Image (cartoon, rainbow, N blue to C red; front, side, top):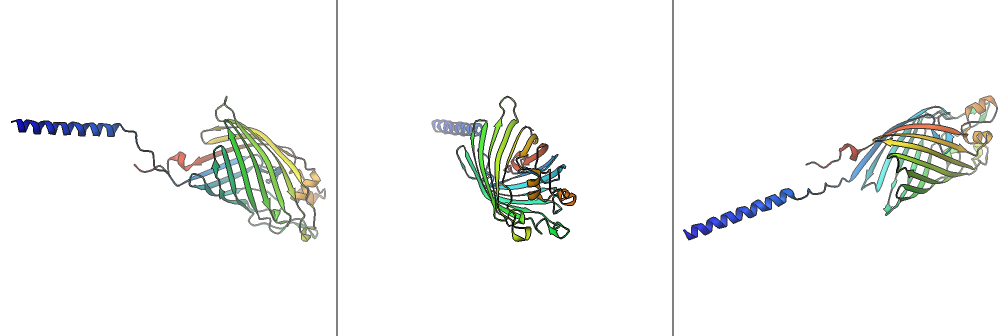
Amino acid sequence: MKVAGAAMALLMSGAAMAADATAKKDNAPPPPPASVPFDFVVGARGMTDYNFRGISQSNRNPAVQAYGELQFMDNLFYAGVFGSSVDLATKPSMEIDLTFGIRPKFGDFTFDFGGIGYIYPNEKQLIDNGVIWTPRNTDMFELAGKGAYTWQDLTVGANVFWAWNWLGTGAQGTYTSLTAKYNTPFLKGGYISGEIGRYFLGTTNATLGSIRLPDYTYGNIGVGYTYQIATLDLRYHDTNLSKSQCFTLTSDPSGVYSGSGKSNWCGQAFIATLSVDITGSQTGIFAPSK
């Protein structure tokens, strides 16, 4: 009987220990979700004017755009594509940008080093009365470098872009700028941002007259508000280009056919943009299986 009692006590003790271990296991915090090696961003936007570094790409008319980007290793590496409606001198069917690069982070500093290919399908060279006004092909490639520092709600940045054949003209083009963005603590989702930049341009090839293209200064400032996946941005743009200098850079057909040699594509512009952005991590598409 003593042996039986001891055996029963041992069994009960073992069962209690097992129950206690099961309870601890059930109460333990769940393991962290498995990291996902890649993510994606897709978006679309509509705007009252497509302004690129101070120059209208849509003849001062509204434009629509769509874009997508794949991000690898927590956004360290990326590759993307962007498409926009345009109305330019060479009348391409659209603009397509291909991007790739690397975004290393060091504490509050973020960097972006990569390249951008600008493609304009189905272009038609603008020739009037035997005068060649545009290249046959304005596709170009840029090398890009960006750096940003974030302190609480403020982010400041510096950028440089370099093209050895700016819009197919044979001229070099270097764009540098400083940027700032302040996320308003008094309005969650609100922000104020701006940019001031300088474009340094070279001399076109002999086919286009070996013209020294004008350097110019560009700036923008605006406010915006993001709610869930939608953002409304209201922004003022301007450059120091005269209408004649603007025509030299754009070959605006209105300046060609009227004989004025002037363009209003580079002047003051107030632009409203509504965009929608979705990431894979937001949708839960890449959530690990249970």
